[in-house]
Image (cartoon, rainbow, N blue to C red; front, top):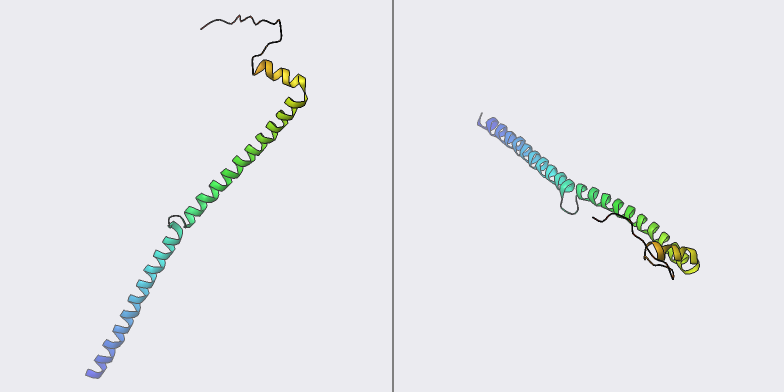
Length: 109
């Protein structure tokens, strides 16, 4: 009888140790998955944020490139077109031709 009890206890210990090992393994797998998702600087959440920032920077770069094209066109027009140059000198630079005067009739604040 004692031999049967010993074998049964041994089998119970094996099952308990396997269950414990399975639980520990499950905890480590869950922790590893959480680390992969939320790791600072390298997790999935961080990668999604960086991808969004990349799209924002690409959009900003496209706007700046368009602005550069317009400014380059303005530079060429200022160098080659005297009418365009005069318009900008009068509007932006507040310049006058010889013998011109400016009369300001706006109300003073």
